[in-house]
Image 1 (cartoon, rainbow, N blue to C red):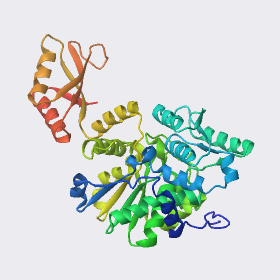
Image 2 (image 1 turned 180 degrees about the vertical axis):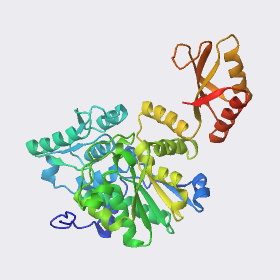
Image 3 (image 1 turned 180 degrees about the horizontal axis):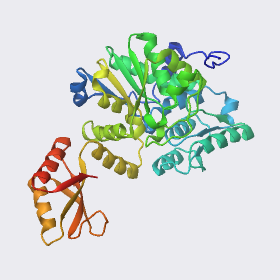
Image 4 (image 1 turned 90 degrees about the vertical axis):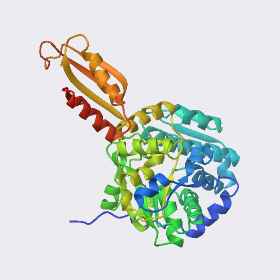
Length: 412
């Protein structure tokens, strides 16, 4: 039996010198984003926890760092032919702004499902937008074909040393802002950001633990690491579109294999809970992909040695999705409670249920009646209620109060 398949020649990892050169190049172009302390996370972790706020970066994510570094490295002749990219949104915006700043043109292929605010922002930065397909697969193929036809340079979102070096400047800033950091958690899709951060951090502080965090429904790294080569996922279903990447590249896989201490996954519930946490407790607007590192801390706070830095990688969220995710996050946090109760079908029954709910300060959001279901007895009605509570303990109190009042309560 043959062993794991390995690339014929192992790719060279990005060096500290390359990342430092990128930092010098990016000076005055990107923001040194703030490191914000989170007291709410520090308590369960048992030590300081800091949020590296790349959601406050130009274009709303870290992507401008890698895109600018890559395009700046092109020759004048290459820049004269323009650049092309494929992206669901954040890389698109980074490439569009970088191209404008460096005096070249950008064509960006995006899926038809890309959030409208990301499409509008990319166009506003000066890129020509072409929409096609329902996932990133079709735009990637079209962008590569366009590069072949026109001579434009394809700017890969993660699989290039210049892109990784640019993203690695986040790691340099973390070391400057939190010199005693013990653990760095990084949101991870294709692996460009975590590769760069790990290269920067390990070069100066090899003792620091670097953790890549992926959405459970789009976690390509675990299987690829086990196989020793990129293994595409057959499908992905996650709200975190920014890290929904079917497979890492050979280069990012080599960085994660050699420099990253652990790959963790977080559930959709973890992501929505973290997004709600960032809104309520950190006062930060973050997209689902951008909260993966925070989600990992919330899900298992004792797993990480402090001081902890969680990279908040992007804040470009569609308001419609924000509304849905906030509702999902409130449900995951026990703030929404859906119940079914069977009561006698006679006047006053609903009023008595509502009185019981009012007595325990549960806010009623929805009420429905069901009289015709075969599971109901004659003279019986089922009431479906959606309630807003103060959290899991309050939700338990509501259910207990209804049970004590003699109602048959079934969580929905």
